[in-house]
Length: 454
Image (cartoon, rainbow, N blue to C red):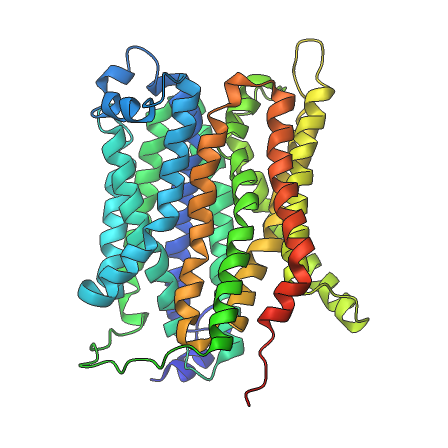
């Protein structure tokens, strides 16, 4: 049976049945990943780096010595640097995972390897001694799984089914967002009730569930293709194509400030909430880790209204172009961090910030994400020369790598600044990126417009 016939016969909204297996696999994988990440910053600050625990972690003293090459740092700074490098490398290793799949194992086996590595990593998080080993396993496991499972979504559809493929990726992305919302809520609740290690163990179990779903759907997934004996070399880029390529690389670099300021809420933001935000409710104190669900929830809620807004603007000829949208998204990142700074100004006499400021700031970050990141990927897929389209699509994630690692470094100054000053700094980073993009949007747009060949 062809993929097209299968799409008409069964599946989610008339899509191939394999989409359901891939979507649910990724839902539980993101559930486990974001559930663990929501606990990481707090776990480091409140337990692992304290006496009685830190000395039990294999390799931690050597890592601290590496980070302290320019002088001693606080536990909070050390935690922020660990978080930044871990989260950054998660975005870097999909390049390695793609290479392994293309050259040796194929997409299916690489995904299975990634799921096993991530399961082992989550389980290793349940013990102090294996903490750094756990991070390494999670970094490489996510690298093996992340890009290769997405590639299989596209392979479910015939080449001519462009619209159906796009809708398939929408279903797949929705599963990612659902997992991103539910993961922190569930593991955070378990950790609050039974301890940090119970939360990490739950993430391991859910990762195994993701692997089970993936294995169960093997017969519905794309069949591996034999590698080509010889690949014809692509012709070199023309001068115009080189110009567009370098312009897109520059635009990707201009999103780094947004990718510094936004992930700060997952690292320092959670620690700050735990320390300085009023978390009281009629049912008891709310776990700080739950707040890592808000931005993903906002991205789900705002998607349809944003699409409707842009369609309405398009009919009137007022829709911003993609570059302007990216600049607006970066500005919303800055404004959302500014809301957290304003909350610090209105703290009560005990220094506790109202949770309303936090909800607004985190929700704003989720809105900002929808303005800049999907738009960037869409612009690259449209404007990149076909000869380097896939390379530039993968290269876009280097903005997340550089931004997140830099975020960890900026976050290391948190305990040396007032809360107000820190969030003003975070807002300034977002606004600086927005200003650069909006000031350069016309020349960027001009350089990305293909010129007719002579």
